[in-house]
Amino acid sequence: MIKLHDKFFKPYIKEEEILAAIAKMAKEIAADYKDETPLFVGVLNGAFMFVADFLKAYQYPCEVSFVRLSSYQGLTSTGIVETLLDVPDEIEGKSVIILEDVVDTGRTLKELVHLFSNTNVKEFKIGTLFYKSDVYNGEYAIDYVGLEIPDHFIVGYGLDYNELGRNLREVYQLNQTDMINLVLFGKPGAGKGTQAGFLKEKYNLKHISTGDVFRYNIKNGTELGNLAKSYIDKGDLVPDEVTIDMLKDEVEKSPEAAGFIFDGFPRTAAQAEALDNFLESKDMKINATIALEAEDDVLVARLLERGKSSGRSDDQDESKIRNRFDEYNEKTAPLKAYYEKQGKFHSVNGIGDIDEITERLSKVIDSL
Ligand code: AMP
Image (cartoon, rainbow, N blue to C red; front, top):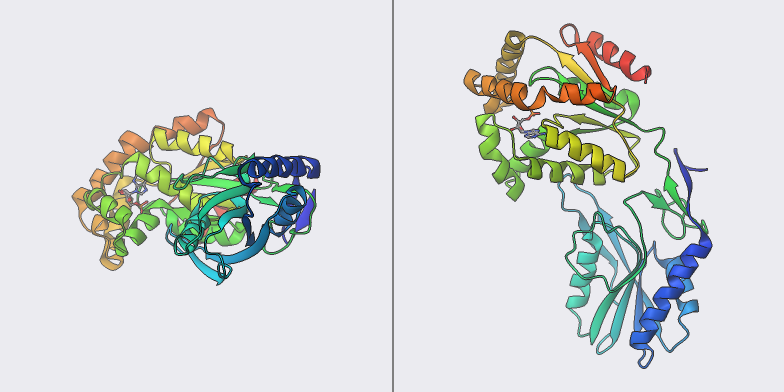
């Protein structure tokens, strides 16, 4: 096990395995290009080591160059990618093969394809050393793949965690055993959002509120927001497929999080099962589901009070609030049994001072 910044990583892919995958790629590319002089374009910084070893394995005429992009993750699901080092000059008429260290969601790839679409290359192909097929959006064909891997956060062999780890000869995987992933459970108004705000600071967790993500999208007029709005306005649940995909996207945005607080998710059996399967594929799990308990009448009063200042239309009308409770009783309440069966369900009194309730929740978390 090694430590980079605040996190531990365990060995994952050995150097020999990496070099064998590169040799296989070189052979495949040579079969297609050995009679011409292709231009290999490495994507910095991650691919520098891969490109060096690839060229040693590719013993035919070729040229090499690099591009550099920088990806920023905004609050929305669209990352913005900026070009820091542009396509090489005199690229016209050449066969270009992009060499990426890793393809995951495909966001960077999209930008690369745009970059090269504006040039007069003869053709361009895409090769990647590591390929996370589970999360790839599938927009472009990937022509050459070294190793297909699950969606683990990896470092080493050129890849970094906040710039550390690039010089490791092998690939390491984030050790997830210390992670705490919590589901905050409870009716609308139970205080999930408020308590998540305190717990995320105390335990250094990433808070994901599906309600907040929907409202952010509504405010920004995104396609997702427009779709969700009609359901939210009535106090109905947004359809599962939409919500589940959105939740996965949110988790993907924080690959190095020390853990997550899921607030307002899952709300149906399908969501709970999808969450378990998704986390398992990432070597993660839910540690505890903690319910904040309070009577309906208290909650209605709280929500109407909140509606006066929050501007949330679903908090301003008692019939919409009651509809949200009905949705909860019918679709969400059965999840108690789902988590009880897994031995993960805990219940906490949600009435009292905010500090007091945080204490009650902390007691459960500290006992995990
Ligand atoms: P909240 O802020 O958690 O009370 O959520 C506000 C509204 O967003 C809900 O009434 C639903 O319409 C929608 N919503 C939030 N989370 C989910 C979810 N997990 N599944 C379906 N709809 C959701």
